[in-house]
Amino acid sequence: MTIQVTHTHGERITVRSGGVELLSYVYAPDPDAFEARKPYIHPLRTLAGHGVSGYRPNDHRWHKGLQMSASHLSGQNFWGGNCYVHGEGYLRLPERIGSMRHDGFPALDVEDDRFHLAEELTWIENGGREWAREQRGITVHSVDEEAGSWALDWTIRLTNTRGEPLHFGSPTTAGREMAGYTGLQWRGPRDFSGGTVFGPDDDGDDTSGAVELMGTQSPWLAFTAEHDDIDAYSTLVFAHAPENLDDASAIHDSHWFVRSEPIPTVAFSWAFFEEFELAPGASFAYRYRIVVADGAWDRDQVATHQKGLTW
Image (tube, rainbow, N blue to C red; front, side):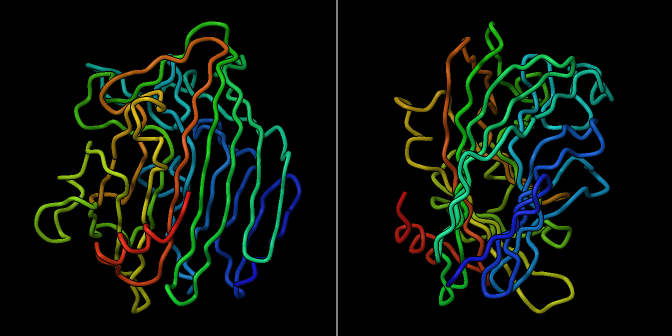
């Protein structure tokens, strides 16, 4: 299916297929610095046009669709919102909120059935010092009308430009149990609350759920839910590129941060249980994929579809 792309310069890039806006990549700076200014994808939609991303929900105003983040980075918060401080809980500390500056698009490539953007960004701590340089890639591909799905690849290569080590952590590394959120994060719409979460190796049926999968590792994780207002289900599949889970190539182990209740969210956490360090001048890279599908896919459907997609 043909892909159409519209670039509203200085604001956003919108990708459509079959008359449906599949996504909008917003890179204009947010008005509220407390929400950690950074680019994000919202809305995110299925081929049928059903929304599968949430934006500024009243419980976490800094949750915006799909976005790259770092909740605990050398004392700064690139996630947004209140900061977790062990023994004191979550505190409003605006002086710790960092930001990501959009520096340019070296590439914006559109083919009939594929769109790719390359972006350069700078991670800036609250005082204005530049800490890291990021090379980001976002690719829309594998639009499949028969399957009712399409795929989004998100890549990151981050280089420490600070001059001293950068320490990546999470609320769990700071002392809060099972709150290892950081890294690439998706926030679902309100009607995804209570949805079904499953992975490739769950015991039992597909209702094993987010609680059992929190903090686990697997090549992919699926989240399916029934919409309000319309008689329809949607499914999102979150997948790692093979090297992400390879100890010889990944800078650190990845674990799932996933909740279905009280909020629907998934993060590819790169520092769930332990911190990792990035030396001055050093870089790390990860590749991720999100498949967006109409319908309530089961484990067999997800596994079969994953096998049909190459990295």
